[in-house]
Image (cartoon, rainbow, N blue to C red; front, side, top):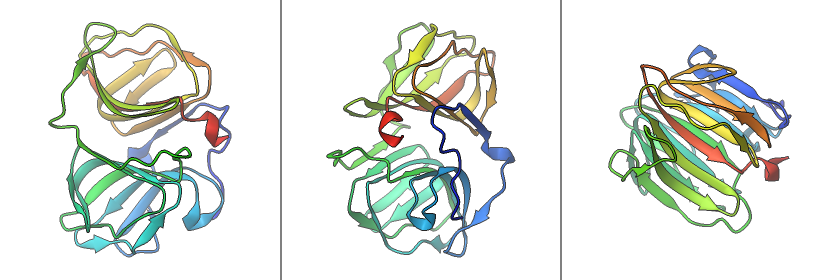
Length: 224
């Protein structure tokens, strides 16, 4: 794909990835769902859902401006290790790897979106890392990464939890990992990706299902 997609960052975007079409990548057995990308093809600034079939691999490549991954299912691997479901992984600018999956996996991937001098490599298992009390009862937070205005975290919502109305300085991006997430604008089941622009506002909540979400805030201004 060499055309741009969802590059107007002043717009709110909602995609239910479970209803989207898979697209083949240059490597056999590796397919993608496009969420956002510029028009640079395989060198795009992009966010995608990537599926590795069992015993598939991708060619060795360099991460110009970094790669950020959350493993949604299965086990993702490279020459440095195995990353099971729930792993958060950051490979900084100019890092090189050759990814593969023996059992198959699905990952959420953000390419070439690191800010200058954000050079820390992170591997964090969210299945075993500690949770911290959030700003309201029923909300738990697991910080993943922080650099300048950018923050990434897992947020766990108990059933029937309501958060305060708030604005998103620098934007907000959410991937619903489990359960159902809500706000006054809509309903977002598992697999939904939401990108809300700078200074957008909402009042999120959950109902009986609760929710687990991956959240990034404050990172969209440098992508304009």
